[in-house]
Image (cartoon, rainbow, N blue to C red; front, top):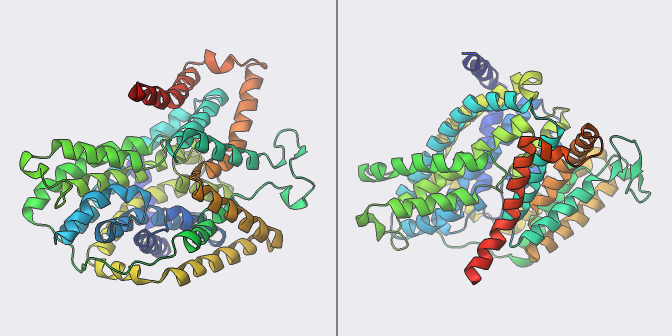
Length: 496
């Protein structure tokens, strides 16, 4: 009953005209960003951080969250019509969705994608509403050893899952951890690793790194290596499904939701894994008469399940973000930084210290899902037209927006040089298949992990056994070891 009262209070806040406008703006912008190939929520949220820092915290978080899950809706449009995923989470949608479009069933593919996203997002939001407060209460009982091991798990899973190799992922992570050490030591007050540069005294600004590595490097990389525009597309003005397609879609929506939610709550590197699992499940469970549609004319279950898994996983990332202060995706990491910019620390105490903001954000998810359904079904023809925007002016606009935003933070030319230097690093990382996400995760969680490690060692009086003596931290260490060892054992077994 207490949860219901708090949720109703959240609706009262989220349903104010100003917050509704921010939610609508976030959903619309997120959908547009998802539709445009090459862009994504991480790029957009990073680019808008300097501007939204001037907005009231609740409105800002509603807006940024709208961009996050709106991009997942929009990403399916390019996957289905162009075979060009707007977001990594919609890669699997392209497998069957594009074949459906080529066989004249683009309307059904877009409809099952939009409605499945709505169903999964709503169910996942209900689960966030029910379980997040209880997880927050449990998290209060955790000590520094458990928190350090949780962050270590986040480091290893994000680094091991993303990118072409674990080594490259860990290299990117250590780059982020190194940047997180720059500045004044939180505990001793000593200045470290600044190289005598005064601008580094306050540390490396996370917003600057996020904008440089994502927004600016994305624009530069596309200009250097992918500077072609899409000229052909499948025509699409309406999204609709037949009764038979409804019957085939709804079980896939429910299964996709169930598969995606657990993956969103753990640091597993995003929504790619549950979407592939959902696709494999639907292919295995499809009726014999529908099996032949997979990989040929396109099976609607192959679109419905992965899309539901994708959106369920995205919504579920709010559980560890709000209750533990641990992001399970790069966009969640940037959202965590947005909270920190307002002096709000995500974690177990957040539901007590900033309950109005948290419940307004959760309530806005329900509202945003309805907005996205309205935006995606009737207006699909409008979103398709966005694909005709030439890439040159699009990426030039991103560079201008990023430059003005970063310079506006401290009016420092040093920040601009650093941002473009990091952008060149981002281009090199993309070119040689180094994942960029672990850099941001390491930069944000690194200082927090360092503080928890020092506190844990103090509790253990300098003994490393403090991490083994406590059951939960010892269990987490075993899980971390499995994450690092299992892929190598499986690879060795396949070779043998």
